[in-house]
Image (cartoon, rainbow, N blue to C red; front, top):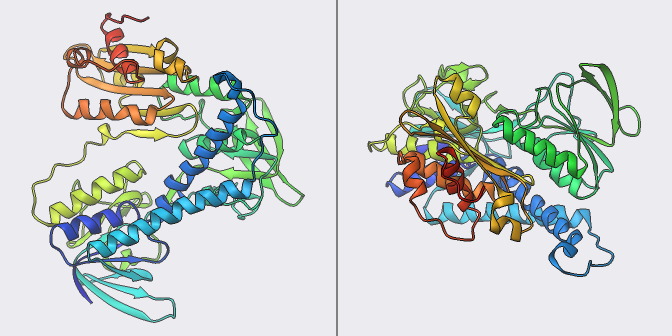
Length: 463
């Protein structure tokens, strides 16, 4: 089997690379050992958002009186039905990728792939037989999996990763979430909303530590107000699963503390799937647990490329897709520009939502910028108040000297939809003046971006 381009993995990096290659007239194969769509569509981004939507609906029902309705009686749910709906959404999206493969005449090969020298791939199929695939260009897009800490081994029952959290057979009464990145706080919000007693344990001094400090403070305030217990500067040093539940020993500034819960969710990041795929045989270089590439996703061995979670950078679906398109277009001889990783938006889908792009205030100052900072609270935004979603704010950072938009940080309802304005504006090198003079529709949440920019320059009207 000979192809122009062969892609290993069918996640948001792999399937996007395959489709773009087919659009450019290439003969393409995708090799996938599990479900089409990869972790993102089947066990990550998409089913997680389905769970969060169910939690949001449940929250609305319990706060019907806030919107002028009589409170519904006997509000209840079936946990397994919420999980079932989530799995159904994931299945629908995976079937959508199957359709796209057929539409674009992409050969899908089911099996486990190992790269070989000479631009070859050995594919072990289900019956144990191996087939050889050759291609002029091979793209490695094997993704990542939940990271396991030595002190927190996952048994899939009492100590689980994100995959287990998506498909628990029964709802626990209590849960310890270790790690407060996007995965940790999203699951913490979901399970807490359904009535689970949740404790977040975070090693760093604040939750969502990669975000702007003001955003971290606001999320901690919102979570604590909702009843989620938060421990920062804390580390789980061991777990005991011998009893009915789990006992987690947590090291804090004040000494050790033992927490008890039904389940421990380990949400301490992602590790790349680069083992046993033949990298050593081909001579492909790795660095700190990931494949080493240049700005165009090329490895050190000609004809072999890597994209997504297997390479250094943000472990985000939209980064994988962007790298996929860049990589394939480079192969096809088109003019491409390296990705500006400082203009990649990050989104967290708990409630309130978080979205950010560019420098935080602290990082901008560390980089030597003299900054202008603007902030506008959603409590002063008419649409947000009407929606019953007045928590949060928009924060913007500008270079005081040249007016460059250095960063934008949003926490609040719909933040993940609003951030695109800042991403596009920064890509177009838009100035603060142009944002302020662009008429934003009223009443909308998007006005908060305009007003935050106005605040940075002393022109804010509504605060």
